[in-house]
Structure formats: C-alpha cells, structure tokens
Length: 235
Image 1 (cartoon, rainbow, N blue to C red):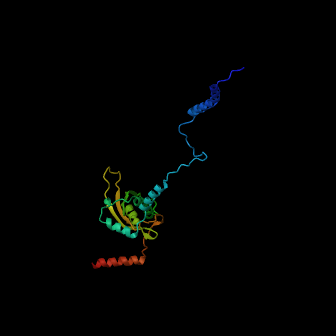
Image 2: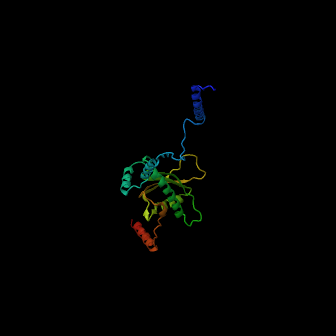
Image 3: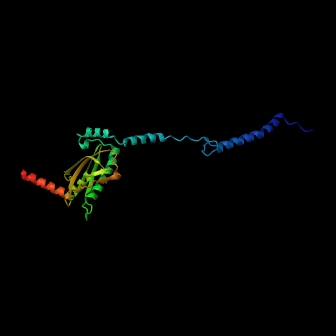
C-alpha cells in the first residue's frame, strides 16, 4: 500500500510552474525592456507631435520689414525734406531700407549718364563713382576723373535724369571737391561731389533715362546771339 503524499508537497508542486514562469518574465523585463519607451511617429496610434508655430513670428517680422520699406506719400516726403533742410547731410539719420534701394538707383543713374555723355565717342573717358551714401531724403556721392570735361559732361547728363517722363530729382547740387588726403596719385584726378534728393520714393529704375538736350534751331540761335550782342553794345 503506497504512502499518501503530504498536502504541502502537492501545493508546492502545483505552484512551482507558475512561479518559474513569473520569474522568467521578470528576468526578461529587467534585461531587455528599457526604463523609457521611445514612441515613433510611424507607430500606429502614436500621438503626433505639435509643430512649433514659427510662421506668426516670421509674419510679424516680415510685416515690420515691409512697413520699413513702404513708400512715403508726397506729403510725408515733403515734410521730411523740410525737417532736414537745415540739417547737415552727415547728421541726417539713415533710413536703412530706403538707403539701400536708392544707392542702387544712384549706381544705375551714373551708368546711364556716362553712356549718354560719351555716346558716339571713339573712347570714353574714365569717370568713377565712389563714396555713395544715402540717408533719409538725400544721397551724396563723388565722381572722379582725370578729365574735368568728362566730369562736367556726366554731371550735366545726370541733371537730366528722368523716370516715366518725370524728373527723378527734387534737388540736384554739384560742387567741385578737393582730392582726399593721402598718398598722391601718379596722375592728378579731379573730383565732383553731388548731393541729390528724390522727387518720390517710388522711382522706377527700369524706366530711367537721360532727357535729350533741347534742339535749338539755327534761326533761334542767331536771334539769341544778335540780341546778346545788341545788349553788350548798348551797355
């Protein structure tokens, strides 16, 4: 007759298998599962990360830049001309967006003036643009050349600059300037300083041209010369 198995041994045998399985799961979890599970945006059901809204900031910044470049009305421009009329050019504040745009207009204007002044000439004298500065309503630049007549021709052409058949300049002043201090050049050069203000902020540089000189008829020229001679003789 077989001996009866004790109750505790029967219970231990029944619990052994679940305990071993739970221990195996615990060891696997401890070894293979990280403390923090990283979620991929490609996982099904994963929450999508919200993108930072940078458009609003860029939009505000762009709006500020755009407002800084807005063309002034004729009344606003005239008011600023009056405001800085008695202020030396070097003390006039700089309106950065306006200054950059109008420096480019000055560059193109000088190119057009050179082309007009020496059109048809076998050789064009060298006239150099330098020291271009634009502030709020005025620009100032220097022209230099070895030939005084070349500076005069380019300066005269610049004075006739127009855009869309209207004068570009509100004011145009040209004065002879002294050579800059420093090492003298092998060949002496002549300098002219030009200070201008613009009729409008909306100058279309693509339509700029040099207005042709008025054609004087032979009869009109003779009459003018005769009148001048009579005036001199009467004096």
